[in-house]
Image (cartoon, rainbow, N blue to C red):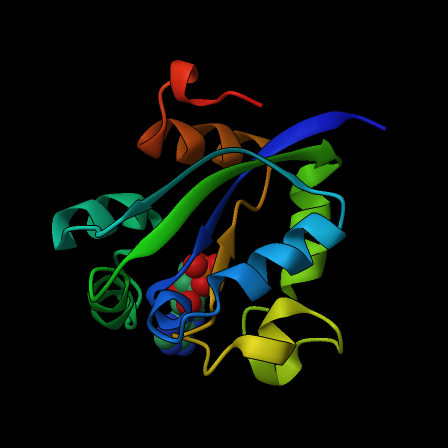
Amino acid sequence: MALERTFSMIKPDATRRNITGKVLAKLEDAGLRVVAQKRIHMSLAQAEGFYAVHKERPFFGELTEMMSSGPTIVQVLEGDNAIARNREVMGATNPAEADEGTIRKEFALSIGENTVHGSDGPDTAKQEIAYFFSETEIVG
Ligand code: CMP
């Protein structure tokens, strides 16, 4: 299996409810290791830049406002097949469709306030990691 890195966020709906430790435990229990991490409060412009791929979507305003509404944990996770493993433990984007045992099934409030984000492929992972971290900040 390939050792990979992926980008992960624990979103403002989770920091607001003080459940970041519970979310992190799920990620660690899935075999993922935090190799870089910081708590930030994204500006609207930063959120718009991060989610630029969605800028034509009807939910773009709601999404970027939510992501700049409070603190977010941004992190790099490492592990075997980390990208797929992270997506598996996160569960479906819409918590109503998420499998039992996944983070979104357990914690997400709605499709907008869905607690976590994870990169969807190797190219995205690289881009998203670079959006928030320099190489020297990745220490695992
Ligand atoms: P995320 O994995 O961070 O990637 C894009 C985000 O857009 C997604 O999680 C959801 O939080 C959000 N999103 C997707 N569809 C909708 C929607 N219909 N309404 C509001 N937010 C959405």
